[in-house]
Image (cartoon, rainbow, N blue to C red; front, side, top):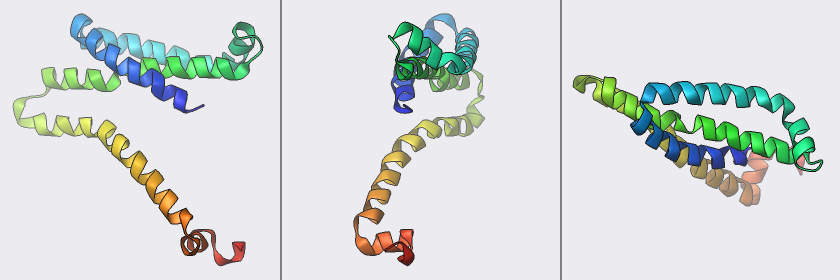
Length: 136
């Protein structure tokens, strides 16, 4: 269920950057912020929406709202790039570029964490270490 957010986020980032170039960063910040807030509140009724629209499937309602929530949050980092390039003075530009490392860190950290988890739980001695000797 959490993965649906990523699909919306991916497309929201692409479209949000293009909209920021066309409409301006401030306007897209406002639109995306309002949409994100509405979809976050909409999670309350996601099950009911799914039952009403998708033939009794509450999970489809949650999936739809999660995709739309991701889509509305997606423009955030694209707009950060545009905002920082317009507002940051040249001597502070390196600090502002540090904000861009957040998505890169998430992109690189997730596979490393999963790989370590699989590595440490694949062999019996490692499993004994993490689970404790008493669990066997």
